[in-house]
Image (tube, rainbow, N blue to C red; front, top):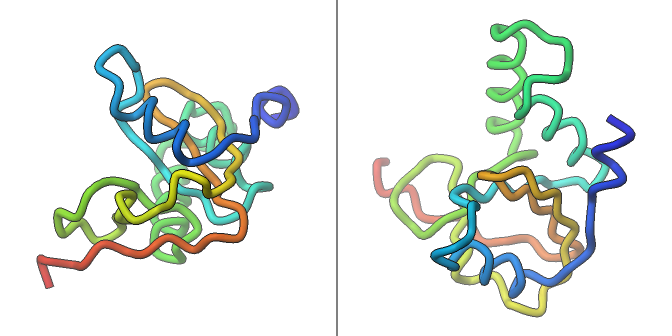
Length: 120
């Protein structure tokens, strides 16, 4: 996990948005992580290198999503855990961990608006 910590980079959300919108980018999924310290743990679970069984990883993901520690970013579509990234300012400072096809993002001092739950 120490190697993953070394891969965290500071940037602005405008840079994240450009990668996400680029046709050449391998990034297809954006996950917002509430705490910077959690980025390596989430990354380890994502790449299945946390030593847990698949069942324990599923439980961990459920807990993270339920608590709001991890949320999916996208445009409003009614997904329960989705964050509307269109409303995050380009100048918002964040820390990122690049794990194609996923970009893990922790916003510093900015709480993104949740997308409306259209399914409710």
